[in-house]
Image 1 (tube, chains in turn cyan, orange):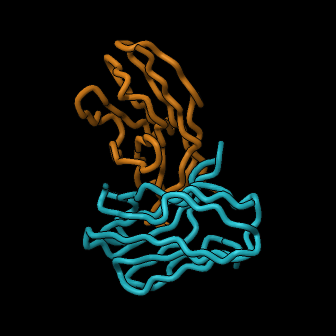
Image 2 (cartoon, rainbow over the protein chains, first blue to last red; image 1 turned 180 degrees about the vertical axis):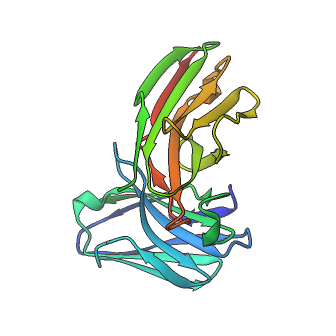
Length: 115
Length: 112
């Protein structure tokens, strides 16, 4: 484990379901991120939280809803997804957002399949 | 718009070979270039480069940045099967320092 734990590891959901992805970091970091990794595409930044405040919403559809209740936990709530949303969703953390990605620590990701 | 292009996209080598992975970029207000190794799922940090011509080295891996020609290379000498992974290049700019812009990655397979 890297210090960033994501659950579940795998998720299969129908297009009408509602599910949530969870991320937890034990590194004392102040910034947390959601990235999406689709096949044959670069990692795409979705959301950034710094000290529980959202500082970036990178034009992500509203069917993805993030939540950061404290600096150690980050959720991604999913509803009415499309098959093209199937991907690996990676959570990452860093000491703070000002350091430009130094010491990003990634979780192992959730492999999401939308059927 | 920032852009990161990695080449080759995939590579198969034999154990003991030396490989060079390439990363070229276009960015406004360059801040840093980072290399990650992704085995299975979690990318793990390898190097961060900010200055031209200064080689970063860790065991059999090394990397260097050329800010004039806008590229970086990652070298792996005496490759081992455990080096098989996807190698990701990412850049950050000073405008939004926290956001990393990734390339598609190079998939490396080292055969026995």
